[in-house]
Length: 131
Image (cartoon, rainbow, N blue to C red; front, side):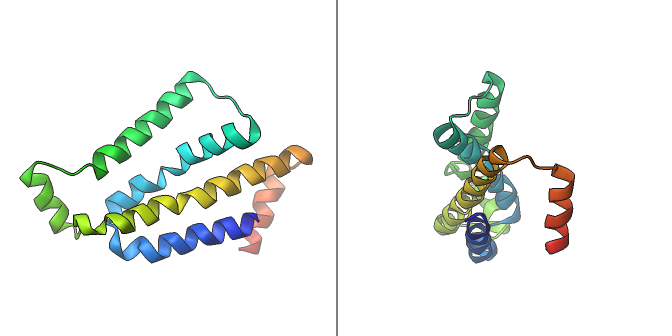
């Protein structure tokens, strides 16, 4: 299930990649943090500190500001020069939603790690070696 989640994230990102500007990709990838926090809260019953919720709100605010239609001509010109038009919003949404499966994979991993003791260094070694 974890591998499937990672594959779905990769598929969504690869499909949307040519249609979403690089600066927006970097921002949209940060959505994995709010997605993971939400999934951990719902599925694992995890609780977080107030600062962590504020951090998630900052991330969501940054994404909203970037995706919000600009009324300024200068910003619209910069977006056009970067290859971004408002018709690309569906690709940006796909790129954004591609972060959901990897957030679910993180929650599944957390659940698996709770069940058995895991040496993080060995796990990272074997994960890197197998890739």
